[in-house]
Length: 245
Image 1 (cartoon, rainbow, N blue to C red):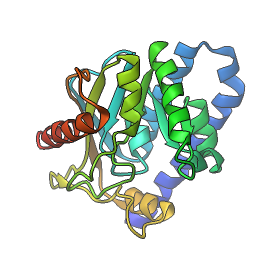
Image 2 (cartoon, one colour):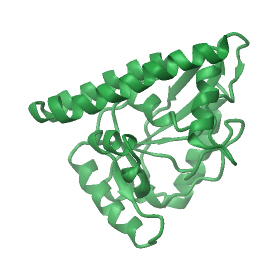
Image 3 (cartoon, rainbow, N blue to C red):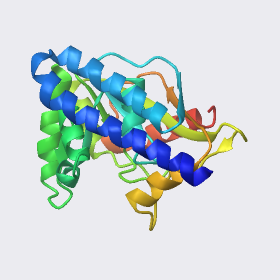
Image 4 (cartoon, one colour):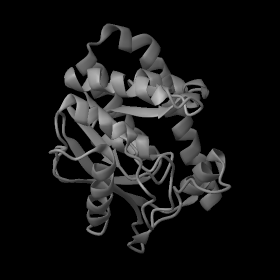
C-alpha cells in the first residue's frame, strides 16, 4: 500500500513540476516581480501538499531587506522556505543545470555561486549587497551542506558579509521535520551521506504525513561583529530555536 501511495504522490508531484514550467514560460512574462513572487510561494505551498507535508510557520517572517539564515536538512528545504516566505536563495551553480529543477530555481530568483572558485564568493557577496540594498529577501544555509536534523553542523560566515556590508539584518530560521503519527523527528526527507536525490524523494513519498516546522527568530544586526563571530552566535540562536520545535 505504501508503494502505491508513493506512486500516486509521485505522479502528482510530476504534474505539479510540469505546471511550474508552464507558468514560468507562459505566465511569468506577463507578471510583475511581486506577482511572480506570489506565484512562486503559491506553487511551493501546493508542492508541499503533493509531498504530504503539513506546514507550520512560527514567528514573523521579516520584510526586505533581510538575509534569512537557516539550518539545512533536505532537498525539500528550498520548497519549504518558499512556502513560508518567498526569498531568493544562494545556491551552488551546478543546480542551474539540473533538468527542470534548474529552470524552476532560476525563475524563483536564485543567485548562483561556484564552489570551484574561491574568488566567486566575493562576486556573489557583492551581488547580494546590491540585492539587499534594493530591498530583497535573500536566504542562505550557513552549514553549506545538509545534516541529519539531529544536530547543527558548523556555520560558515562568508556570505554573512553581505548583510554587514549592506547594513541589513539577518533573521535566523530553524527547520525541522516531524512524523505526525509519532510526534518524533522524521528522517524521511533527509538527504545526506550516500543518499541519491531519487532515493530521498522516494523515501519521502512512502512516509506517513510529515509536519515541517519553520521557526522564524528575531532579526538581528551585526552591531560590530565580524562575520565569523556572527556565524557562531547565529549557530547558537538557531540551535535554541530548534529546541523549541
